[in-house]
Image 1 (tube, rainbow, N blue to C red):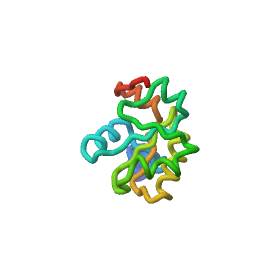
Image 2 (cartoon, rainbow, N blue to C red):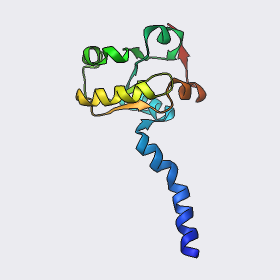
Image 3 (spheres, rainbow, N blue to C red):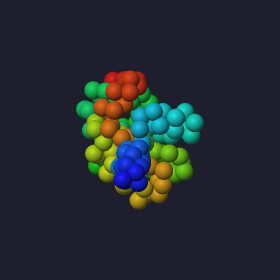
Amino acid sequence: MLVAVAATSALGLFWPAMTKGAAGGVEPTEAVMLINREKAVLIDVCEPAEFAQGHAVGAKNIPLAQLEAQLPQVVKNKSLPVIMVCQVGGRASRAASQAQKLGYERAQALAGGLKAWREASLPVEKA
């Protein structure tokens, strides 16, 4: 019985870390550290009208449909971390996968998207 309780406790402690890793997204605070320490590039994959309504400070807008054509022009150094952002994370995940296929091995989606960025009280600007 004691072993079962210990196993359940361990699972409870490690479950958030395991599920976060499975999602593959970077949390907003981690994104800020990557930007500050490793010059990560924020790419907002929303449509231009959405981008104009509000986006993370410093983000560059490349709509998802144009990512393959424009990303190599915007981010020439493929070794830099690239953080994809959208409103809630769905498009950003697809964009991160596309970027990885283009050779950007450190491409990741922002977990929770711009919504999570705002909830973390990080700066947002309008175009």
